[in-house]
Amino acid sequence: MVNDYKRFYPGLSGNKPLTPSNFANTKRNTMEKKKNLIRNVLDSEMFGNENKQYYFDIKKGKNDAVFLQITNRNLTVADVYKRTHIILFEDDLAFFVEALTMLLGRHATGNLGASC
Image (tube, rainbow, N blue to C red; front, side, top):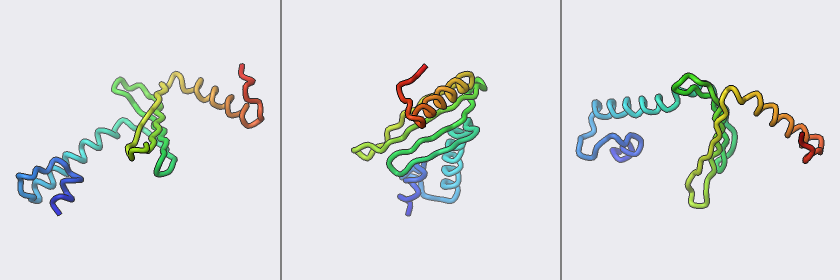
């Protein structure tokens, strides 16, 4: 049972006995770290399956700049996830949406290759 806790809370040392106090402190520290990781996410959407996921996150940077981060996560042959992402700052979002809309519109009407 202790090993199960160590897997989820790696801060528990094998030398310390598992007491409610040790467990609570380790859990609190782990949760605080996770909270800091998602603190700058203002909104998020996700789609995909167990092998491939896409995440669209609106985030706020340390300088209070708002940006969109699009992340792709793929499961590789070695059963390891590989992540790639693109960041679009607030100033560029209108251009990105316009370009994507134009591209998808041409695709929908069968006019691929007829760019500006």
